Image (cartoon, each protein chain N blue to C red):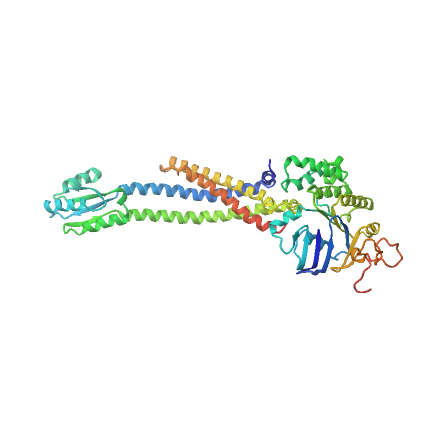
Length: 285
Length: 255
């Protein structure tokens, strides 16, 4: 076994508690990020589903004449980004309302006049479901004199995006706090390891070992700690997904590449933390 | 091989440790560096290892200059130096053999070459039969032999010994010095800092550089420029009582 690997492993034997704490700290900080990933992924999926359903609903004045309507339908179909268009009559609207809201069925049947307006439901082409494109069509349609109101569900999308931003902010803060703790624990572990091996290090320097060679066992230890921390975070994230899915609501697991990324980030984090610490503490030997 | 030119060394806390020190040691010489504690012997040893840089002047060791050496070149210089200390500096949790092998392992010597070289140097210092002993199981003289073996393992050009006999009884000290003579006879340059004046006086054939308060106050080579000429200054081996001993009696205050 090469010298660096042997020494790195012996550091785990020498202070197992500290090694364990380092792994757990990295694991938890990345778990927070992993949970955010899980949330973000599922919100993203939700947004996609909502976006597929993006429609512009154009409520029509009761006085709209069939010829007006026919002309408007032709014009709207020709607008850029519009996929198709459906005319919902007052009767259709009432039927739908009665079907979807069973408990109000009696109320609807007792009405003398149908209070629901007729409408046009516009669906957008997949590439044109952006807020701007939708808004352009909505504003154009609003210009017809017989249009009472136009709704296009942007408020909803904005709210979802806002929730996602909020979750990202919270995860970054909590993750950073855990990462700081992890960095401090790793630095302490390196400091103790340097102290325990100070005689060895001074002899290594005396006989002409390069700085890189002296540092290598510590860096390797950091990489191993980070790798284990990342793996722990991936495991915890997967566990959280299982528990949430089984008990609260069905969600989707984040893609495999994201899990790999969690482990890679942990490894890089362990490497960088120990590099910073080893540079500082080796100066003192 | 070793050249100090107008070297000054000052420390922020303790002030001047070396003042205008110049000397030149050629390949194959064995040189004693003597003087009281605090005279600057160990400072010179540290400067030669380039563990510290001089405040002024230049230190040159086997092709490296203190003025131009880069941090990453220092390990390369150290591989050309074997260093031995008063306190041995062996790793207590490793056997004699492992202590020597360690120096080779950490400088990237191939595994297959290590055991052969370890055997050779342990035999050279007369300790092949104690290869499996831990430092605590060895006498002071034996420990220093292990340290010498470690210093020799990388086949250095120069052996620097800082008070190598300081912790040893007289017999062990003589043994170690005899080892240095043998090594020197094979062509290696040896620089030995010591305040063991008896040892120095017993070997007048070797050059002596004496320091006092950070300055060179005596250099037997400068005192006797041509080997054939009679020494201008009294040799260190001069019988006690002739009143011309330089070693250890120089007092810059004139007392």
